[in-house]
Length: 424
View 1 (cartoon, helix red, strand yellow):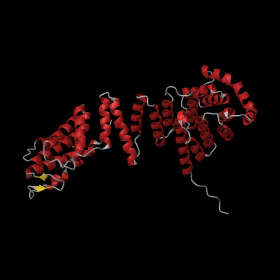
View 2 (tube, helix red, strand yellow):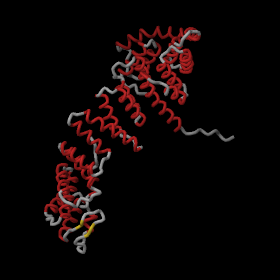
View 3 (cartoon, one colour):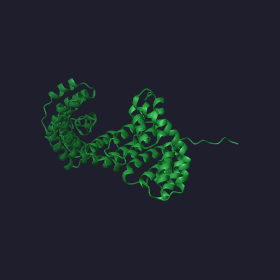
View 4 (cartoon, one colour):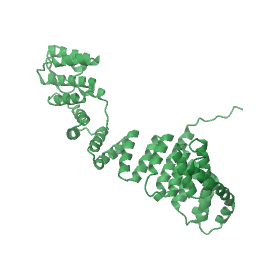
């Protein structure tokens, strides 16, 4: 829901102490600096001032009694009385009464022109709060014709359509709000991203889901945020198992492995890819973290299967690398690179990915993605980012997620205090 701080919106109401105090017996009628004609009798001014003082003291009951006794005899006095009723309603958090008070204010001709657009937006917000969606939209339209078209109004329109169970109509307003906030240079609140992601998710727009999650993670990048983003994105239909594997690797790199399911799924994807040593290492890490137990059936069976295969995989690597060097294309080198990658032997993986790319005949997206990751994991963050920037097609989203990770690591490096050498 779009939100405003109702205790602060009375800045535009002339029914506050500034105007009330200004109306002295010597000024029966005077044009105020804000526009409306200030015309109050001495008795009305005194009663209004007393009501205003009670409001400022937080005494709603006393203020209500004083306001009820007011007998407005001019347009401006009617405006002031409605403004005071509004402020009492704010004090009592009575939204219906606030909305009625605003209607009474609009019936007068004393609403300052500079405040009218914002007040019409507030009227729309209050109508939304009390469940009058039709009037809420009407007030927002009116506010827009008067020149008020803030991002808060855009989000409120989205909320109204969501309440009307029209997510397709709501989504463009959320997208517009995010675009306008980006253009303003101001950070986008996490809740805005969550709303937009939910809508993109419901619409099956996985490209936007990924894009929004990456943007969100660039601002809100805790381990918990990473786990939530990747866990949700991994539910995308038809995702390649190799892509899924690299997303689980990213989750682990962020320290975001938080459950039995995380470790078990990662180990299963690694085993499916033929990375037996990696599957073994993940199960061991899950047990060390207390998320897996040695008696758990699924991972115990998997552990028994991959342990002997892991030893064979490692032993076969030198011969496989030698064979890849003389192969006619890069497919053998890509397989060797993937093996080194799975063993976290990243410098060796980098050399093999480069060999695979130079020979050709391989999936460029997969090779460049893993080359970029391996470079970054080896400590070459700029080189890793450059390699990932070349990725397109099915691997673009996973490359994008890893790019966010690289940017975060780069910021951490930049923030480290310089170590000065001891004086000689």
